Length: 352
Image (cartoon, rainbow, N blue to C red; front, side):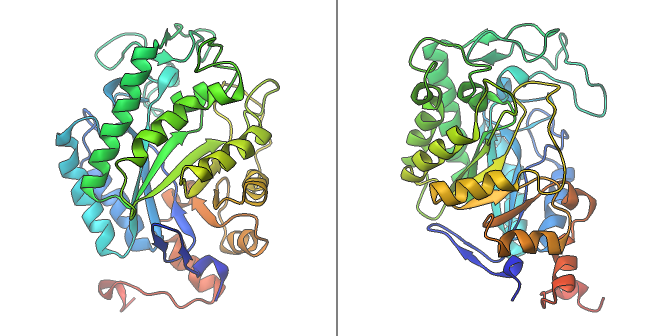
């Protein structure tokens, strides 16, 4: 059997294959509510045969949205439509995950296909927050520096959103600590110049993430798997490093985090990143080997043989597919054909 289609048993869940749908914002919600677009979008990828779907960055508060059109889970009313999506995903024998997120200083932006400029006024904007009053871009208004009391409120926002996630029936809860959003902003010295217990040395900069996880440990049942997405490097001198990512992953393992979803970058704009096929795989490989942690790798993985080779070379445990699944919801089925694996089709499609 190809490695790509072998199962993987974690402590909390069992994945039927090694193909995971990466969280990718759709910017199609209103007031945080999912709608028909999200149902069809996630439902079609579930029919396509991935092992698990990680729902796009879902804000834990209105202030935590990247754009006005982000999904949210800051109130009970959001649960109704998300529950319909999760139920359909489960009926396809696919696990459902959710990525809980706070945008921090990268919030209040416009949706990508309208303009690249950050919004500064109007009903769809808000005062953004961050660990330090350092703007993401030189022409942006500096964010509000969070007080200790405000940090406690954000930790509770993650807690309440996680509680709703469990009630909805998600099998995986992933914390978004990557791509320059709030938790990553605390991790990186480029965006965190605090002098209190949340800034300065490594132990202080990882404190917010650990504080959130400590709270979640008390509410997440044993059958729900906790994952963390990180940017393994900021790609900039003086920023967050791969060595720090390995050190963090070792700590997260002791906190019962089951998978590190390894990406990179995003803390500051206009960084030169050597983007090419498999360019992020070495990060997942080192974290897997040195932290002895289950890892998922992402980034320009578009071919079945390419994904299989990564697994055969034990460079990662999971292949987390993003843009290729936007182009082709049935990538797993085509990969099975290429790799000679018999793949179950829904009875409605068997005659094809």
